[in-house]
Image (cartoon, rainbow, N blue to C red):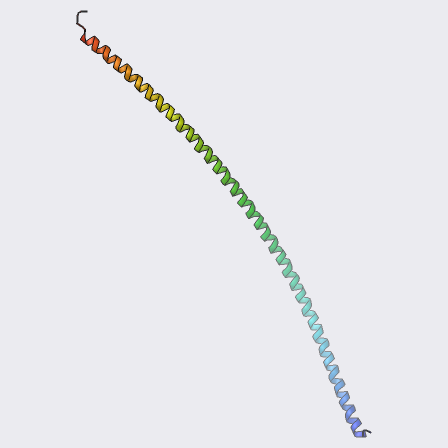
Length: 134
């Protein structure tokens, strides 16, 4: 059996361990309360970051949509310009063809004037060669 001094020593030791356990439990409670406060703050921070990310995503998507519209508008404008230039080139080709016809017509007129000029020269020569009293 245990001696009476041994029981007292063991009882003091148990009381000391009980006090240490109470201190440890109090410290754990304080730590848990602090952890809950930190977790609540982290949760708010995460929520704030999510809101900002959502706003950035919305802005990025709007920018992307705007760029798509701009690119589509530029593509349409390029197509319209190409079609317009093709039409202008077609008109110039038509004008070239018309100028070729005009050039040929002038060549015909010049050749006819040359014939008329030649005839007039012959008439003048005949008139100059005729005897002066007739």
